[in-house]
Length: 191
Image (tube, rainbow, N blue to C red; front, side):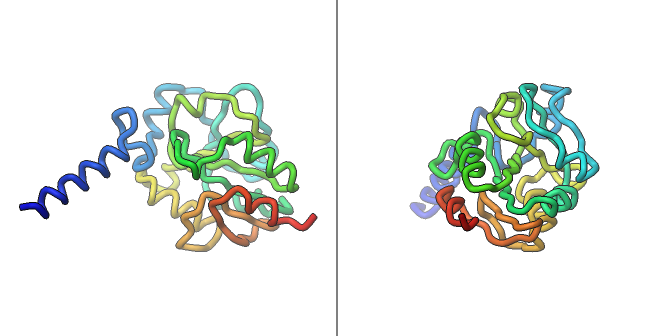
């Protein structure tokens, strides 16, 4: 009986840690919900030339695209970082976007912020980053399950199946390495 009780307590703890404001943020995309809450937030991007040219402005926009289009854009950049952003993350492994942008600027690295899932409240804010936040095209990947579309998106970018880090570094679009600590940014590009 005690093993069953321990198992039930374990399940309860897991469910409570995943539940944020009554939803399971991070498990599902919430694309449709976010689109309904703010119909003008998303901009579908079907061309890497367009994606590479868009700069962030005061009006929040989430660029919706897939890994193949982003990869073509990365090929035009000498050094670039993909940061997998979880909008509601509050752990020590989550960094404010403006700090990441500053570190990238200091090290000559282009930053592309990729939203792990959709959240109207956090996506409708203006962040001090050079490029708009990019949302993964869940329709292209035919899934609303975060782990599925995120892994397919990352595989399109890196041709790797086992990357689970927040930062992914590229040189001229070629995957070099991934990591979780922002301090690694300062050692990626020789001064």
